Picture 1 (cartoon, rainbow, N blue to C red):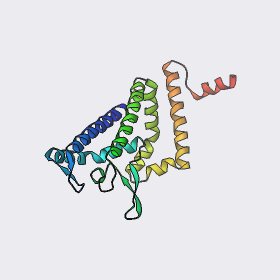
Picture 2 (cartoon, one colour; picture 1 turned 90 degrees about the horizontal axis):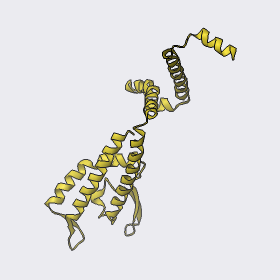
Picture 3 (spheres, one colour; picture 1 turned 90 degrees about the vertical axis):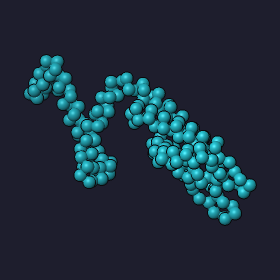
Picture 4 (cartoon, rainbow, N blue to C red; picture 1 turned 180 degrees about the vertical axis):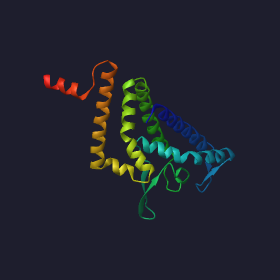
Length: 199
């Protein structure tokens, strides 16, 4: 993940958290324990629904599980629920909204730490060289993916890994020869073979 994507996702999570706080602060309960929304809460709910899918994606990318196990003693069964996609159904399962805010707080904390790390890396030229090298190694698999093949499976297979190793060696060798050429040193195979024989 690049610094700019991390920063965007962090801002989206913070905005979602503020909007969720605003929603819950503008709701109340009736005598039967059912949640009621005022006009502001209904508007906030519409905005939250638009953002839920991206928030779930951001939490998954950072490695946070949004699944919570719960049990219903009266009905005698247990189940699992995604507490962000079911943000407006938590009352039915008797799950406090604080559980959703706990997950959001942890994800925001991890994105803040990642943002600091990525900001430092973005000033390191070797970081960008490494990214360019990895992108070049993955290019043939992306072409296969665009043609309809399962590029991820191909890349993870033994043949795919061997291909990437050979491709990486060839790219590294070409880079070394180009550097030698720019320095004015001979780069012909016969001259390089002569140097190796003398050693």
